[in-house]
Image 1 (spheres, one colour):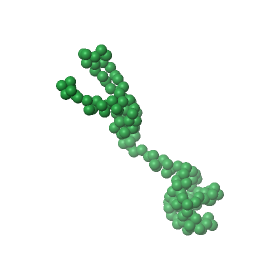
Image 2: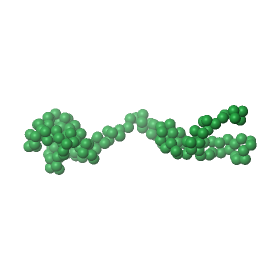
Image 3: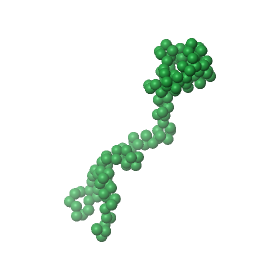
Image 4: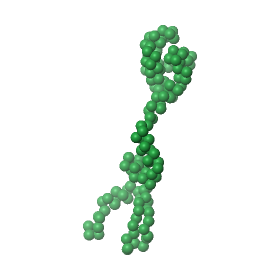
Length: 146
């Protein structure tokens, strides 16, 4: 947990309790400025003060309160859960989705290659890079375009 996370949690807990920084300071024998410093990441309470703050804010596990900010930062909406599930269930689409999102640009992708009659290779799948795709985009469509 970061100092910033601790500071935010302390301020949130104080506000939820309906107390001012001065009131909390008075209870602890500290100034309101000291409490404000803790809440603005300009200082931190020692372990004993932290336990006293737990009592004041009626918190049984203040560490869980600090982790709450972390969980909120990575909260996932129902739609995002659906997208993640679809991504995981469709492995063959992942390279295309990654390219669309700009992830793993250099990763090879697999495409179906149909052999022309003049080719000696059979129909099948071949891996190509993004660079190869870019070159193909600029290539002539037919032999007549050469």
